[in-house]
Length: 212
Ligand SMILES: [Zn+2]
Image (cartoon, rainbow, N blue to C red; front, side, top):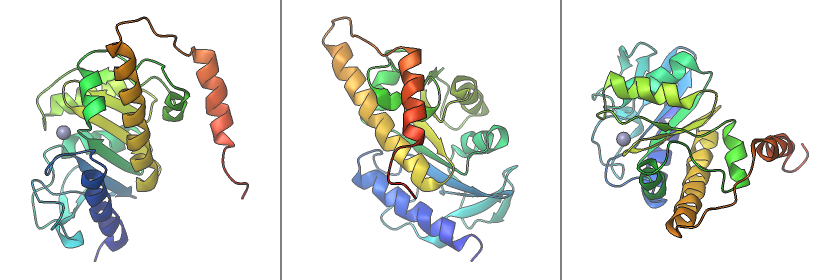
């Protein structure tokens, strides 16, 4: 099977999205890029029964290469990420805190140093109807150099060199959004981290973990 390993990874990630409560039902979608091919979740298939064969493979322009089902309605958003960034994977969630925060702010406030892992400010894309080229355009405009973006009144998108990295970012982004919501919910003015501290943490995170 073409991109068999990547398609299997996508199935596993979709099941995890439901288990981790980052999506409800068949919402959210996942893609992986290999060269000029993109494996992306099909539209409206229950993740519990989704098979690797049902995950379609398309070219970067969206042309189907090996796809038994229609791709996710958000395929234009995934393809826009690959057209303009070097990402190897994209995860789109409807996680609760990210979605709630997207209704309140234009940018995720720097309540936690984890924001450093997104390589830049995490902005909120202007709302557009799901699945439209306009949403893909708004998403790119807000993304900038970052690896994460919120979609206004909709959800979140994270990018990574691979699916594990993009997925990890989705979980950390949800954490930061949850913290931000709780802070905003107090009605008090929060202390925020400044750009210099976030840059310091970005450098520190680059060397974090066990030496290899
Ligand atoms: Zn969505």
